[in-house]
Image (cartoon, rainbow, N blue to C red; front, side, top):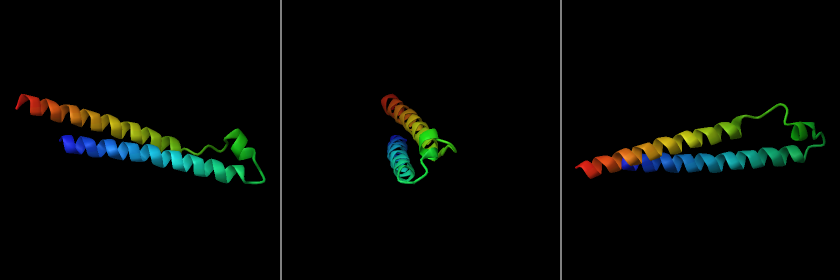
Length: 77
């Protein structure tokens, strides 16, 4: 169970890094366009980096819960 928790923690951190890369790539591609309206006004909004970040937080929370449960089961045994 603790191994699964560690796996979820690793997935959460990978998701954070992936979101950062997506956001940087999006901002860099938009800033090089001749029409900067989308870059300056953030419209239409792109939800992918934010969704990856939220998913990362969920994965980290699940991973921590699994690690705590696994540690408590080991302490009881």
